[in-house]
Image (cartoon, rainbow, N blue to C red; front, side, top):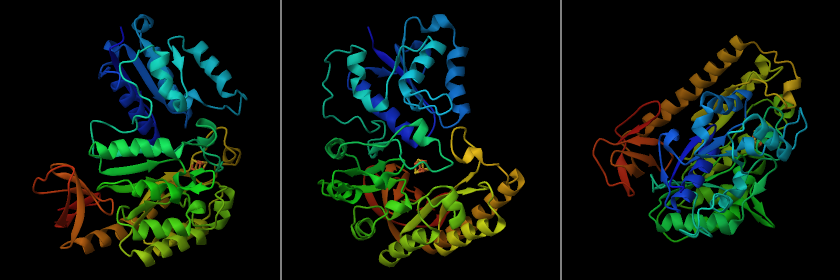
Length: 421
Ligand code: SF4
């Protein structure tokens, strides 16, 4: 009889959101989650294929375990390895799955995350509770914050990125499903809704856009905040700017991935916009909502990136008042178009450029944080002394407050990572 499960998650925030989906789905069938895989009846691996290393970790996990340890359990593989398209060997997902099953006989099922609602049926869990139309997309251990995937995969084929190969083509989840999940989350006391997608603002359903979806989320009754990750400049419309800057339920924060300030490099990256587009978006946002925080992603040391190209990125971050940047030092990913180019920026230079970007952005952030000292800002408490500000700062409080409530608190101090109230 199946009573317990264990989940091991590899990779990015999307995978952690997916792992939560699986977790909550199984909990609805009264299955108990264990921290020790050896004692669990079902072992779920939410896998990542972004790098070879990530796949090796999964293989290594199985190889280390004794064959006999799998005899009384069911091992399910989902996530990127379950739907990978391998360009080099030209293996489509199904063929690749069969190859995985041959290599790792301890795997019982490989299930595409899109089909994960079929898992109870596949595992024969019976009808303990029907999951049709029920929310599986939030973590019950933190009822105030919910992650909601709006799509899966990506069609953009940025030249450095493996996601379109690892996760496959973009599939937008139906609006009704997303809204039903959010409604149930809010009904159960949820306060912060984060919509997730590799390129979240490209969501579409017939003639409805991501802005239309957000409007419907906003119209759900209740007191809650909304944000979304991560946005592509090409799809950041004026309607979206108008909505998030002027409507109260939206956090005044956005992560918009620019990657480079050089048009030449952006073209080589196949990003499909020019640096000026990003600058315009930031200007429009700040005109409407001056306190709005904008963060971004940037890659340093893309093949052929010159000092001049890099300086354009540095200047762009300063011009746009970017408060935080997730920096990737370029490294080739096998199978991508950029991997055919010579990785010709030395690591030493990549590190120097990374430091310069970080220093510039840290300076902007410190200035912004210090300007907030003495001011009151809305904070949503997640635990008695930890919260999230209306501008998406991480907050630590001196006094204790009731989780799940929003308070106007005075900023007393700040650190690199957040605010103290
Ligand atoms: S939009 Fe993002 S996920 Fe899609 S290919 Fe480009 S970098 Fe990768």
